[in-house]
Length: 486
Image (cartoon, rainbow, N blue to C red):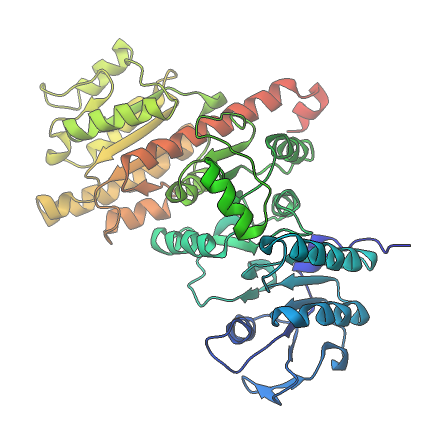
């Protein structure tokens, strides 16, 4: 009779961790992960397993897991491929709850590797043991200060939970987070996903009180599975917006994913809208995943999933490019009503355009705080669901005079106040996004995302509309008793 499977919560909140394949060699995964775990502040016991040396990083080693005197909750296996079956048997004998299997060479190599992988999973399941991996980079869980990643990389804190079948893409998303100042609660590198699945990780992150948005890279999953996960999350009152980069848009991508993680993917062209308004946002480019997750983490959705966007541009080119990008993203740029246009014209030179996009025509050159005043006029309009400010925000102190700095900083604070007051999203596109500018630092502190790319800004706004549509649909179909609870 099989033992009941341990929960992911038990696996990711361990009291003790053993690293099988710990190493003295700084370039090896077993050394990097051991150092990360020890120096990262993990409060539990750390056991280093290596049969050939007596100490690593100033700590005694054990020749095998069976020689460890205490209980081991989580085992991280970073041994060479031939030693994995024996290591699994040691884990079973020791009674571990979970295994992070770093080693590659299983289903991604063909039928023999897949068969061995399935046998090992079956053995572990008989004893209730969960496996994360194989062929993965490890994991990071902020809540338990568990850092067993095989990479030395800044780990910025933030509200995003990340799940990825690719370790390298996970590193890329971390690099973006480090630059943009909005980080992660969790990084689960799941590799081949032989046991612990992407949907199960989503459920775990939905229940994590520190996570507000789920981001992921996945190579094989069905749309209906994702839809069911989000419906279940919402029914339990634990819905978290999710954004995924789903591989396999072409035959080449499908073939590559089979070789990468053994995933049996199917072609999903870019035009596939099967996940639209499902509560899971699909992005098509790797550079969209983190910016979209950041917007979902920091900004409200558009009211009822509305798609009517006001664009405020401090240049004709910015306004035109943003208008096209908003439409391509599936949103609308309606002509603003007469009362709104009249209020806008009072704040701008006579040569300005007030229809939408709004070209401020130099209003910001006279006073950068005008961005906030114009944005307030737009968010007050019930026929506007969100605002995009595009162009040069943050750079006027460089372009014109340092005297503009305090006014730009005041504008940044005011934009944050507007989001909180009116409950509508405001996103900023600026060519200075990669510069360390006080006004942009304030925007970040106010929870107003800013981006360098016009297209990514508009994609992020579209995601806020998409999730808003999902939530509106769930509320409209919920029984009256459930709706009243929410």
